[in-house]
Amino acid sequence: MNFPDESPAQPLQLFEPTPDAVYPLEAVAHLVSATRRTILIYCKHGLLTPVIDPADNGYYFNDDAIRMLRRIESLRLVCGNNLDAVRLILELSHEVDRLRSEVRFLRQ
Image (cartoon, rainbow, N blue to C red; front, side, top):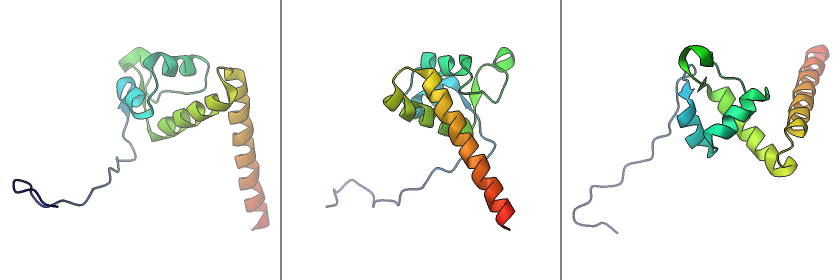
């Protein structure tokens, strides 16, 4: 249905940030629907690392950190506020990925 004052629909354009894009804490909190405080707690516990030294320019994160933050948030649904359990799962997942990569290399 077209309304008289509307222009024709335009196709949706995907947002693809540049690989070196960084986002301030406020934007990251909005992107992942987490509070600033929660993100800072993750940083304090070593679960998440900003790409720019917070002492210099504040907290800034890249796409990898945003993906990690989303992963942490999903693990919290399972583990609750037990950040030690979240850390253990993340470490074990990293080790599994490393071992898989090593096996692939050795098979070549």
